[in-house]
Length: 137
Image (cartoon, rainbow, N blue to C red; front, top):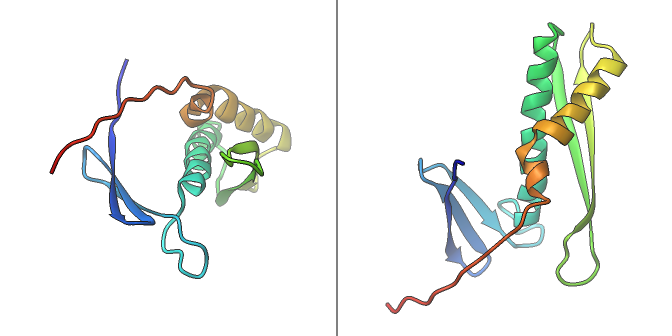
């Protein structure tokens, strides 16, 4: 079993930065437009789901020797009105621009990508545990 680690550090009241062990950083903020400079945590969840699904879908189509001229996923999340405002439904619309791919084969690839190979999609069903501590300055 492998583990991943990130550290999320406060930059300001509504600004945070997440960094992994390799030093890759992601800015996060909770501002409303027009002050928004980065994605919110809920935006990042949709981005992670889309990114994870995209990689597998594109690689599988290329393995089938299909041309990929363009590819994108539009990911839309509908949130609960109460608190917490979790996603009650997430819809992913996969778009492949290819002169030789067929609709049926792409639909199968999309299903495999989301339902079988995407670790992020599977993680949305995972058990979450937590601990806490206070450190004195």
